[in-house]
Image (cartoon, rainbow, N blue to C red):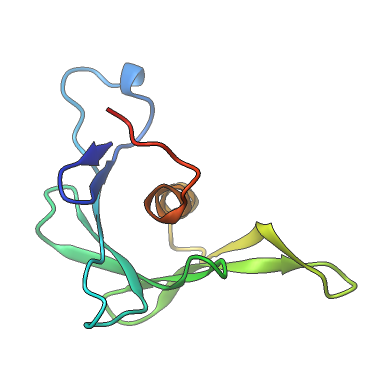
Length: 125
C-alpha cells in the first residue's frame, strides 16, 4: 500500500482475509538523499514506521540488492541470474534468503523495489 512521501506498508495476507483494520507488519521508505549513502535504496521499519529494522542496499538496475539487518548481516539478496554460458538476463534474477529471514518478506521487498524504481509501473490511486 502506497502512502504519502514514497512510503509503503507491507501487510500479511490478502486484505479480504483479515478481519477489521489490518495492521502493517513493515513500513518501507524510499531512500531520498543522493549525497548521504547513495547505495541505500530503502529503509524498512516496523509496522509503526518508528523502529528501524533493515536497510536495502545496492543497485536496482543491476538487480544486485541486499537486505541488511541492524547488525550489518545480509539476510536476503538479489543477484542477476547467469546461464551456464555466462549470459546475463536483465529481468531474471536469483533471490537468496537466509533461513532465519521470512521469504515472503524478501519477495515483497523485491516487488516494492520494482514499484519504486521501475518506469513500467503506473501510480495507484
